[in-house]
Image (cartoon, rainbow, N blue to C red; front, top):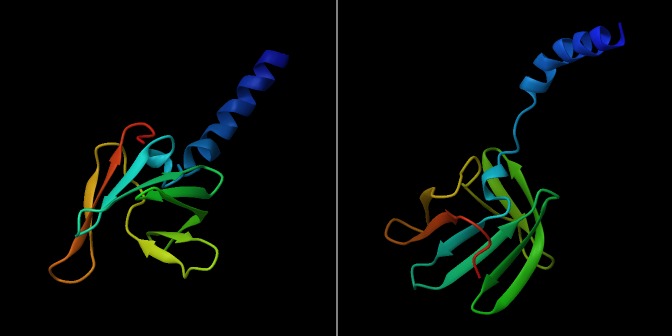
Length: 116
């Protein structure tokens, strides 16, 4: 009887579990978001499921928080305005460009693992 009740509860809960959306940043967790600026400078960003991130550019480290808003990732760090860019729903191997203007862009990719 107890086993039947547990199975019935699981069957009833399955649709609710299936409807729960995966985190749109899931493909970046445990991996590296590599951004290459138009001048060739590289930034490695590491996002965590708790909504925090760490970025390293030229040996300088910054930390802050991130959220997904209106289809963009928005990073916030103390003393800096939020920076929002495309990027959710990507996975290791994904590549895209973030344009600064018509001719200049950042080449962005997700690299498997936490690359240093």
